[in-house]
Image 1 (cartoon, rainbow, N blue to C red):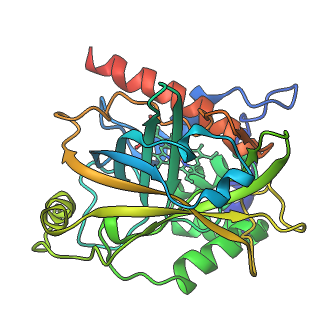
Image 2: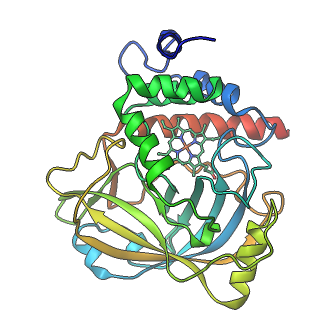
Image 3: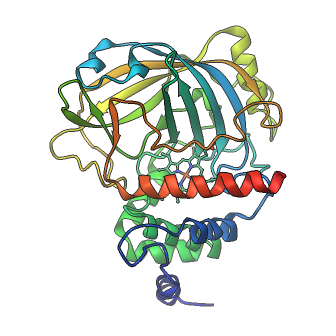
Length: 321
Ligand code: HEM
């Protein structure tokens, strides 16, 4: 058996092909293969967040205080929502009756046909501050727990991530609609005066929205439908304004301490559908597709996400032809 330090060297010695010579990030195709190596391939499906279903609904403004920071139309009018909830990882049969990280992605269409995409998950901060380091983490996962431990010994931000997400945070089973999702990456709000304000946000369940359906490995859609039958299923978009010492470009660092928070909007689900029957399967939930009044930060992970999601949608839709 390889010693921990040897394993770490093996991982670090693998080609770090993610960074192009000009320092840009242009190897989505190769990085996608790393996901396939670690998580496997279900043809015609996403290679991460593979299991999921579609949601439809609306997104409506709540607190007009957000308009001091942005002129985005998603905070002045009610938008239509075409979204998808998912389990992190590459299994198309990930169990619903076991705790795991989840995803929530949705496309907003305003009455004036402006588009805006929000793509969030249940992590509180990221295991790496740049795409190449994150691909090392995915690769290490494919090699097994010892490889991840070895990599964490070399990478303090991964060690901090694992400690918080595996040991500190609560791991009680919650359905999608009872779960808080976080932007992880920071973005900028831009107002009419052109002032930019760095933010992160969370989608926080607006009500109890707990476990109501009979538990089985595949009950989350039944659960959401049961909650829809008795009341609203909704999340509040709670925006955190950056403090002066927060770094908008490093998703591996949690924004600690008190922050000014604004409940800017509410996402309300009106119906669900399987991927086969709904309209989310073909959508590329690229988090850099933003309405006026938003800008991406310089966090390199955002650009990497944009590229790999674009590659992914091409691959999976091609497999269906
Ligand atoms: C460099 C960093 C990241 C990489 C390389 C990456 C990679 C991927 C890949 C390969 C997929 C599957 C795409 C497909 O097969 O079409 C995916 C889906 C997804 N990722 Fe990421 N990801 C990253 C960061 C994040 C972050 C920070 C979040 C959340 C804050 C996130 C949330 C999601 C969600 C929710 C999905 C599923 C979206 C859907 O339903 O279409 N990812 N990611």
